[in-house]
Amino acid sequence: MLYRYFIKVSFDGARYNGWQVQENASQTVQQKINEGLSKLLNEEIEVQGCCRTDAGVHAKELFAHFDSQKKNLHNDVHTDWIYRFNKMIPADIAINKIFSVKDDANARYDATSRMYQYFIHPERNPFLVGRSYFYYSELDIPLMNRASKLLLKQTDFTSFSKLNIQAKTKICKIKKAEWKKDKEGNLIFTIKADRFLRGMVRMIVGTMILLGKNKISLDDFREILESKDCRNAAALAPAGGLYLAKVEFPKRIFLK
Image (cartoon, rainbow, N blue to C red; front, top):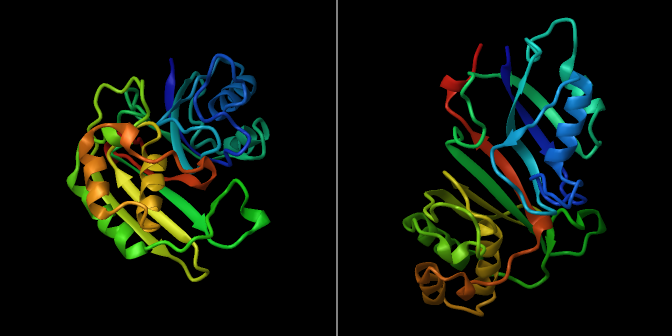
């Protein structure tokens, strides 16, 4: 008999080719977790993530599911499985929690929302290289937040999607989008939706930076959004500033 589990994962994506296992790239987060758990549990483990992240993108919270012959991994009073899991994977990846879930629970398809954050720092900081985007020019945050409100009214995000992706639909429902400045003057863009397309957040950020520099107008941004043509959008913002921050699921899929 197989038992299904969810794991909550966080990772620094700086040295990985993204989350997803790839034919010619063993340096992916999913592959490292597969290898570590398979060796520890002495069975073939294939974790399936709630989404995929590009090379260099980080995650504060990513969920994945897997099946195992082992029972009660989430609640074994004799073994600290989280400790043992983390001993088997690189130090820049962490498994933070294990959940027992229903047999048909799926980390990708049962997720009801995902939230990303993009970080920009305006002063040179060697400790933030690859973990935030160093951008020294002043940006018009109120104008960028006006553009953020336009995202809430749009459903087709073809304009902010990489070409040749295998998504069946480009429809997404944005639930939140806003820019904020912290006490140190760093910028944080938070965006929450039911789903995201490949490259979507980084393309939105790149285009909003043009807006914030007054390289394009708010009307231009609206036209790009409604054009359904990604060639009109800006280039992807650097991967190192992007974090998957939170994923939500219905309570009904979790077992007590």
